[in-house]
Amino acid sequence: MTVPAERSAERAAEPAGAPLVRRWRPGWELDLDCTVSVLRRGANDPAFRREADGSVRRATRTPDGPAQLHLVPRPRDGEVEARAWGPGAERVLDGVPDLLGAGDTTHAEFEPRREHTALHDAWRAHPCWRQPRTRSVFEALAASALEQVVTTREAFAGWRRLVLRFGEPAPGPQGLWVPPAPQDWLRVPSWEWLAAGVELRRRKVTILAAPRAAALERTLALDEAAADRALRSLPGVGVWTSAEVRARAHGHPDAFSFGDLHVAADVSWALTGEVLDDAGCAEVIECYRGHRYRVQRLLVLAGARRPRRGPRAALPTHTPNRALRAHRPRRGG
Image (cartoon, rainbow, N blue to C red; front, side, top):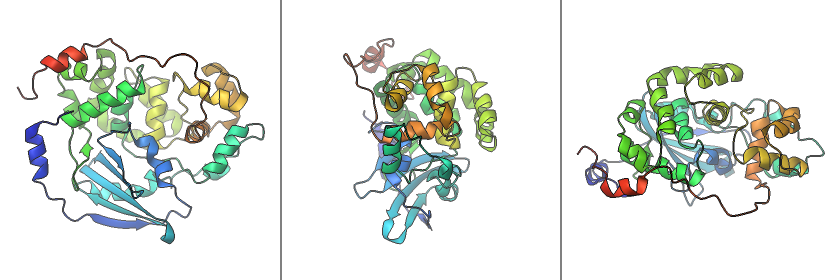
């Protein structure tokens, strides 16, 4: 995608400036990429980048303003060095322990059952995985809404396009973009939604949630059940979307993705050798209540997926995005 020229020029003129820097000692052998990889919306996510040296950069929007966070593991010292730029720098640095799993207080209580060999293997391979918590509820909701009822490939492409066109360059070193603020999502023209492959039903989730963004952030203070009820009170937010948001923003280890096209089938196959629907999978993992998302994520990290039969599903063709790409009005035109 081509970024509008006037925005590229504006970004190039900004100096990176000196970051705020803190070091944090997790107290366990941290696997940085394993912990935060779930926050990445595809390989070309403009708000997330994995560096060759093992460090991670993430752009986000805080109540104090945009920020870029650079996390550098220092395994010899048992520390993580966190650097942050922008008005939200202090807040994202304060949130580093939560982001890297310090709030996952039930981790030590988890124990796979003996008969679930695949889960045992996943737990042994990733014993240091902790549940991340971004504390960015609306941001997680806007991204998850794009992923409803479509392939991940289409959802990630739509996310990339909308962030690059309606977000803003992240403070600090060049390359990352901060996702749009709630009010900016409301300004996205209908043709831009369609050009990003997002039909009315999905876009309405974000449009209707944007005016309630401040209330959404207050769900961070609620327990899992109350936060789930609050999220599902929003139009277009069901079991699946609530779970996707809470797993990332709230750090809820029981937020299993019921309603997903693949998750229940993959998890049930890994645990029992049978491909089951949501109801069947729910029975199998009931013994892990309180840790059901932990089960889901560990199996994903271990690559436990049922054998696929038949061709990959084609991308939906319900939006006239190809035609709109050729004839769309320029932003501001």
